[in-house]
Amino acid sequence: MNFCSNCGGPVSHRIPPNDNLPRAVCEACETIHYENPKLIVGCIPEWENKVLLCKRAIEPRYGLWTVPAGYLENNETTGDGAARETLEEAGARVEILEPYALYNIPHISQVYLLFRARLKDADFAPGYESLEVKLFDEIEIPWNEIAFATVRNALTRYFNDRRTGRFALHVGTIEPMRRSAAESWPN
Ligand SMILES: [Zn+2]
Image (cartoon, rainbow, N blue to C red; front, side, top):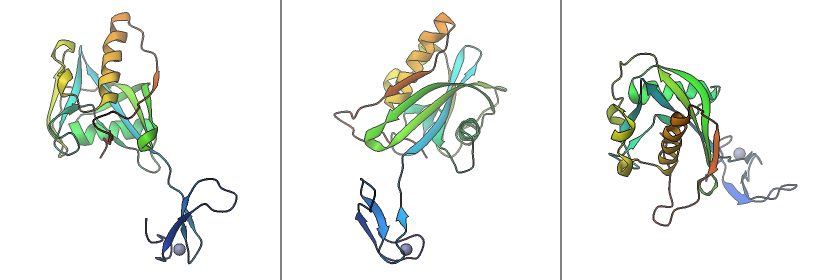
């Protein structure tokens, strides 16, 4: 941020009084513009013994597979956001079940919350952010073409938990990877 969204004045980055982190502070109106982590919400949509994945039509990770997910909007519950993203990206209507995976990704200031969800019907179609939307059996999952570590981790746990019939909330932290520092996923 270079200019104040309140008055248009120039912004400087400094630690305000009684604070301990640098903030974008307007030099004209003195508004402090706080930036905080983004929450990404999504789901693992189930249908019979399969899960619905989307092949990304956008960068990053164009052409790789993921679950429907994106930024939570203002004034939206996490479950509503996950259902909305599923409708937008996969053209699918879901019943949101319980939270299933929570990932901290502190190096890019993101938190991911993935729910389990059940498709209401088998009617789905790719939205503009998806090249293709498809139901996968466990043995069909394209593990080498999964877009994000969070999704690979959540799907692995999902299939393991399904064998035991007990789905417990998993909380994890994703560290920076050597090759790709940017996990940056949502849209
Ligand atoms: Zn200002």
